[in-house]
Image (tube, rainbow, N blue to C red; front, side, top):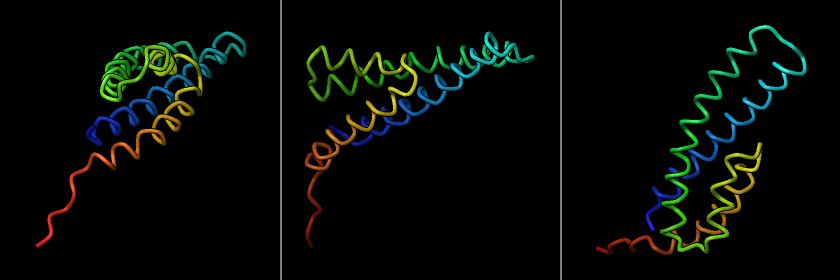
Length: 112
């Protein structure tokens, strides 16, 4: 497996996780704290999170299919982008698991 597959998953996991935390804070500000301007913030972040979550799904599915994960693990990784802060923990676990496989799959340097 190429390192770029893991890297793009990691980037999208962080982006999705940050946007979901911001969306959660925006919803709290909008409905519980009744802060002015939270409505437009929540709308903008919600739209961004929705579109980027689709990109996250594509990259996570690609990573899972190349890593040959079982269906249950694949579903857990896909759903991690919908639970606030879960994407950070799942990304760290997946990265630790796959870094050795990515490093082992790298071609050996050519000796002169």
